Length: 103
Image 1 (cartoon, rainbow, N blue to C red):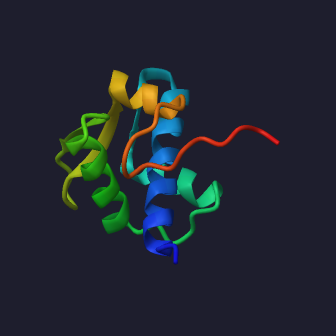
Image 2: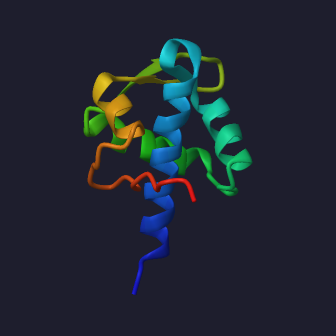
């Protein structure tokens, strides 16, 4: 049986990488990432889930996370790395969904 939580996390991570690959400068803050994920069909992506995914991507050398101090706590900014761009473009990576060909 497929683990739904795992599938959703892998899909979110791929969506994050693909989104970062599309924006000028290849970086976004966590608030924008959450908004994009909601519009892509991943509702309920909480701040904690997004941060956990960003940590996963950083630990795997796919992004760099910059923490900007704010009055309400740090704002995380994800910066796409070259390896992350490769995965966004289809290179397989454990813990991240595979791109599917268009129908």
